[in-house]
Image (cartoon, rainbow, N blue to C red):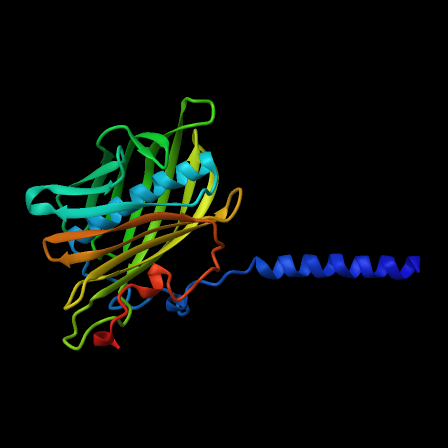
Length: 285
């Protein structure tokens, strides 16, 4: 009997190790099965208003990641508004609750052949889900092909458990593409991206997230914009989503929706998730 138990235990351990080993292999998205996608697929005609919206959405999500590190994955949802009108130099994202956070974007002049920098900064100290947040500031850099965005470091200060403000830094890289999403006139109308991100406290890494997004321009229907992040390394599962609908036109991006946090796993998906419902319209089927 002792030999049988030992054999079973050894088999269980071997199976566990084998399972862990196989789980370590992760493939790149299908679009990259043959290496870098063709220039026509791995590029976008992203507008400056969309670059501003992505930068603002990213900054408020990075702020939320810092909050989650402090408070854990407490579920909540707050209304948000994203507005970008470069002609009047008015570009912001705002949490619609009383005393909520507001971030503003400054679009730097594009450099031909290189790309564009967009700087995002917090307007004033604010409250996000009951916790004080201050001094959010970061630069978001886009390639000239509008297929890459890199944010080397966004600084965020969140009031911690010891009542003082803790310093967090967040870095992210995003990869944008249209794929085959063009209408009957040959115009692109959907953009996707995926990427990875790290969160550091006092300069040392503490969490890793992966993210994906989908944005659809309005064309006889409301435009939509969804950013979704899932924690891969940290204290537990957590998802952050910014989901808005409204105007996405040349010269103006103006949408409203929610910033939400859910305690779900990265594999969680349903037909009602914003990233699955964004852009679903018979006109494009």
